Image (cartoon, rainbow, N blue to C red):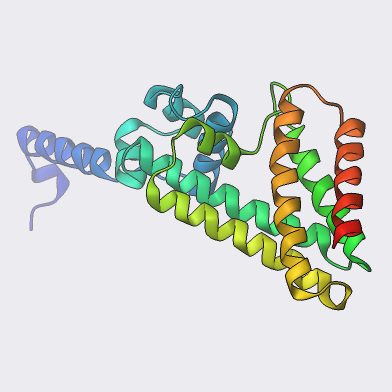
Length: 213
């Protein structure tokens, strides 16, 4: 076998080119969660249609070919970003309601959790991403089904908290009304309502829900 000193310049040049091509062909390393976080915030701030692939590439800190290999097209990025959003939201709601001593306490905790979320936008208050997606008509059928399943899961979480305090039918009715109220609060947040106003609205809604339950 020849050593490096016995290899001619042309052969060394070919080896260098081959090594360079192999390095370029390797998929770049990236943090999937961090990339989706960047895409999620961009979609949340501007909506699906207004976001371009170049903007997504900058927000995700990835090159477009790498994005295509990891997520597919823009719809694929949006689908995965929405999945991250729903997973995180349900986890936050479950944690917020953990340890509650009464149904009222749990409902108030859920409302405050979402109100704080709606008011945390980098450029100002922002609505629930799911509400925005439905309003924009940017959800594919399978994503709409997933959203409906998440809403049903949230209702189930609340019903479990209701426990012996409400009859089964009353608990289902109460949770459905509260989910609608929570979606409405996200729109009020975008319209400029303050945190104290949003909490006051949610408290009034909870009073009515429990009064009629």
